[in-house]
Image (cartoon, rainbow, N blue to C red; front, side, top):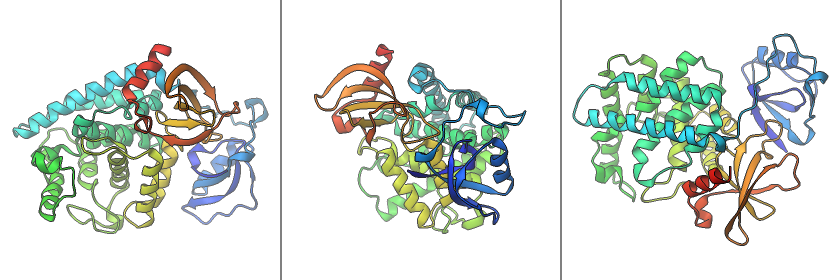
Length: 393
């Protein structure tokens, strides 16, 4: 299977087919295996940004067989997301509590207190740097009637995960996380009947809805201690590269990288989240929509591809149907072959009942993924699934 990956994901043993994107004009002499870390560093120095690899030809090299330089430090393995679910859930709920305080203050015109926002986003960043999979998992467990609160928290989480993946400086990530946390605060000024309307908005209603960005900008500008980068990401989250976004019709190069990133995170979360009046899309469907938006010039195509690589073909916390007629939750990605993650099977799709939970490494097992699914497809509740897995843990 051929797959495009970010250069940061390239490892010794991968079979490189061709360069997908780069800042320069470097050309591969031929397709072949990556032998050591020095080759990867050379590709990065040449400006290579993403690579097409053939996962069927990946070699499972051990550290002793690699010619690694002295400063090479492998990324330590992460715990499966489900085992960190309690900590992640508490942090997510704490973030929602702070978010509720933010909206309450904004509604009555009081200045926002930036300190608790900094504290909770710093906790989130530390958790993500330790194990990004845990919080990536928890944002799949959402309450339909708390979309506004949970969306802002989730976009901040996604922005942090994406920025870490891109190896952006941690100090900048802190500012991006705060901006994403506050990006929709202006929605508190939009009438609820417009904000939660199940059907298509009229032109007049959509004009009213678009003003939430202006309100967010005004509220954030009035917040003591806010950084220009935090304001930037909130102000740009609905702008499009073709100039048809809002509220200022910013176009092309005038939209910063950070503005392009939050637009992707915002749309992805909006597509996958459940709401009172509609169910969210599967991750694969959302990825397809993001790619189409990139192809049509609304979003940054290169960053869309990087975001999809960041989240993984089968994101941690998502559900999959296995060839064995079992449902499983994805617990850990497989860098060598993204189609074969570590999963935890828990439900018989054939007999429609829970079964004893079983950890499966699909890179070593004969079972395989047929497709990604949603809990709703089998009349299941994601919260109850997680509770079951915790009791089985």
